[in-house]
Image (cartoon, rainbow, N blue to C red; front, side, top):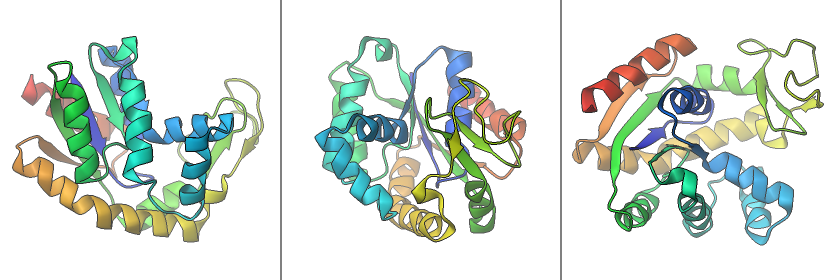
Length: 216
């Protein structure tokens, strides 16, 4: 089963993908995490991605597709995956179809999580990331037990450069503009379910599970 979670930065795709991953036993494939790993490793693709991310722009399709295709070809994705942050364009969606078709699979469900600009900026403005393990916290919704310190590994928490309000607003605007055709693409294929991302974590997950139950 291959599930795609769509939605602007800050709407909570990563949190919901992790919950779904634990319940279904499917790997959570996050394009953002793939980018961060490549950037941390200093790969050529990682350096290219960094330049776009720092400007609040989407990473070009060619770079993104190469990273995701490599990840989906790993053994743990043989039974499916939960895709978070990919695809973001129709070109990426078509590339994903080709990758999955090679294993006689296809996208089963696309969930679009929506939310207001005000809510998204509030969530993103309080986000802190661990320098060591990349765990993400929020000062309001998911604070660490000890300020400035990761619960999991004890690493230092910091705010990424791309978490500033100005950069985040641009990221959200670019996302909404460039992914609007993708949302309609999946809607026309009968794969899209839209849910309210402004509810609390259990409330959003209940909607996600209801969508999954319908296709089952």
